[in-house]
Length: 469
Image 1 (cartoon, rainbow, N blue to C red):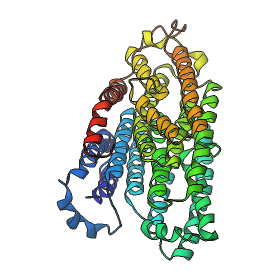
Image 2 (cartoon, one colour; image 1 turned 90 degrees about the horizontal axis):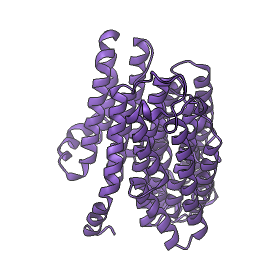
Image 3 (cartoon, rainbow, N blue to C red; image 1 turned 180 degrees about the vertical axis):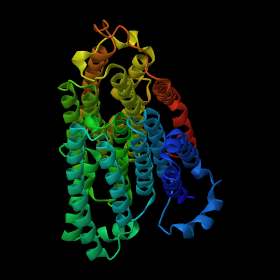
Image 4 (tube, rainbow, N blue to C red; image 1 turned 90 degrees about the vertical axis):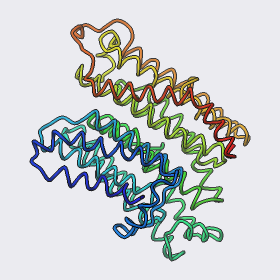
C-alpha cells in the first residue's frame, strides 16, 4: 500500500502529458483533485488494516523500505489536504504553463510522500531533493524577477542544507556502515566525534529546510514572491514535511537520547518563535506577514520536538496539522485578495469584508487559530506545548511561547483590520467576492479548523481510552 502514495502522483504526471495541452488543461484540476482526495482518504484510514492486501502485490514494483505508521498517516493526510488547496487556487498563464505547474505539483507531492514514508537517511535525502527541485521550479514558474530572486535564494540555502546532509550521511556511513534509522540509532549509543559532527550537520540542515531562525532567510522572499498556489503549498506543508516532520522523526527514531540535539532544537525553536513574531510586525505586505508568521509557528513545533516528552510531541504533531489548516486558509485568502485587488500591500487595502464577506470572515477563523485563541484548533496544540514545557520546569521557554502567542494575536488582528475591516478604501467600490474555487476552499478549511477545535476534547477522551494519555 505505501507504494501507491508514490505511484499515484507519478502516474498522474504521465497522464497529464499524454493528451494535447488544450485537453490536459481542462482535466488537470480534476485529475489532481482525484489523486489528492484519494490520498487523504487512504492515508487517514491506512492504520485500519483495510489496505494491507495490496502490499505484497505492489512491493516488487518499487522495492524501497517504506513504512506507514500513525504519524506518517497524519502527514499523508496533511500533504493531500494542502495540495488540494493549492490545486484549487490554480495557476495563471498559457496552457503549457498550467500543465507544467500541475505536473510539478504532483512531483512535489510524490517527493513529500517519500520523505514521510522512508526509513533510511539516503532515501530521505533523495526524496528531499525531489521536493526541493520541484519547489524551486514552481516558485520561479512565472519568470518574474521577484519570483526568480526568491527561488534563487531558496535554491542556494536549500543547496547548502543538502550539502550538510550529504556530508552528514557520509560521516554516518563511514562510522556505522548503514544509513537505516535503526542501525544509526544503535551506533549513537557509543557515538564518536564523527557522529557528533554528523548530528550537528543534521540539526543545521533540518532547520534550514524548516525555515527556522536564524536559517529562515529564504522563507519570506520565497513565500511572498511565489505564485499564490505555491505560497499555499510551501507554507502549508513543504516546510513541515522537509523540516518539522523530519526533526520529530529523527529525534524519535535516530537521535533518541541525544540531549544535545534536543536542547539545540529547543533554543532554535524559541528564537524562531520570537524572531518570526517581531519580524511579522514590521512587514507591509500581507503575504510577507504570513510568511514571517510561519517562521514563528514552526518555532513552536521545533521547540516541542526538542523537548521530546509524550505531551510535547503530541502538541507538535497536532500543531503541524493545525498550521497546515489555518495557514493554508490564510494564504488562500491572500490569493483571493491579490486576484481581486491586484495587490497584497497593506496600505492599498482596507474594508474588504464589505465586498468580500466570505474571504474576510474565514480569515478571522484562521488568525484566531494561529494566535491560539480558544476554542480554535490552534489553542489546543499550543496549550499542550506550553503545558509540556511547564511540567518539565522549562519556565523560560514556556514564557516565550505564551508571550509570543499574544504578540501573534496582535499583529494578525492588525493585519485583519488593515485588509478586511474599517472603511472600504477608495477605488474598491466595484470589488466582487473571489471565485467560487477560492471561497469554497476557504470555507472548507475554516470549517475544518473550527470543528477540529470544538471536537478536540472528544479526541482527548479517545486518546485516554486507548491508553495514550
